[in-house]
Length: 105
Image (cartoon, rainbow, N blue to C red):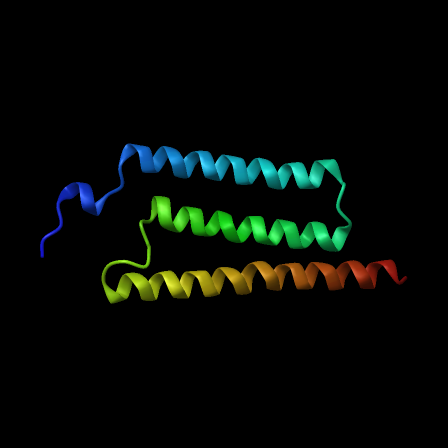
């Protein structure tokens, strides 16, 4: 089955929605850091969740990777989500350990 040009690429509305979501998620991350209302460990978890959602927004709205379509599309999405989770939560884990070891001295 051949895809039309509009199916292969997103619409203007989809790009605008993705851009607005990306800006809101970025502003939320800055707000978490600048307000300082969360403790350091819970702020790291909130930032990790915001980062993960940001990656998913970019994959869906800009790279057009979703659960529908061919197997390689789904495989690429699955690998990217897994790699992003390892990267984000691994970084949080390392930063938390560095903070604990720096405070103990």
